[in-house]
Length: 66
Image 1 (cartoon, rainbow, N blue to C red):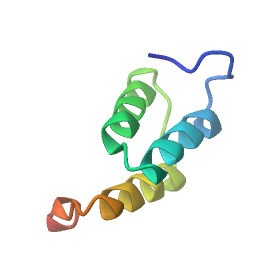
Image 2: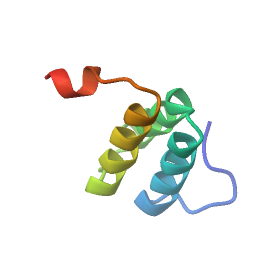
Image 3: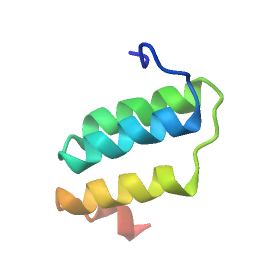
């Protein structure tokens, strides 16, 4: 997939993940999160904040059950 034309850093990934979560496309956000991990980049608390907000937005509460 990749982020074309952007430097691959945590800020770029968080921007994409946050954007997809805001519009309810958490699946796409998860793809970027997976790519982020495969590239060896560490996620940040902002990454998880975006994902949690995205899951909340779509009503997926399974995240809270662990």
